Length: 118
Image (cartoon, rainbow, N blue to C red; front, side, top):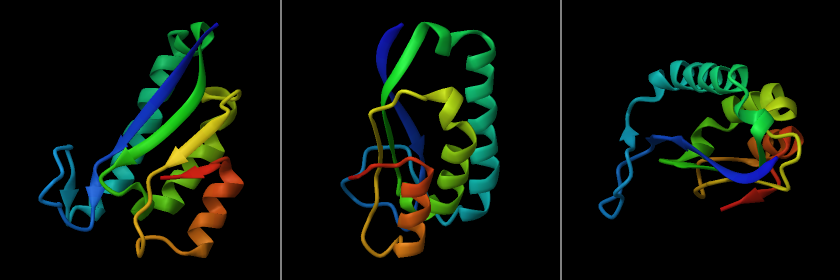
């Protein structure tokens, strides 16, 4: 299998920073559950077509926006999909901004497989 890195974009943030050139949206927290559901469906779609038979995800980076706003949902996603999406990942990084996540969210992410914050 070919080793690859995987980037997952979570485009939700507290506010849009002036320097940010990424697709990100503030004030749309209500869209987060549908976004995470769509992300899970897309991962399953690629898996059903054998993408993860050919490629081995070695590193995964979740960026955004401010993914730490979705710590609980990201932890649920990792817990549900990690073993088939990237079972051999050496590093799973999640972008976090101070003030957007507390110890319970960090603990849930760590327990679900996240081993690095950016």
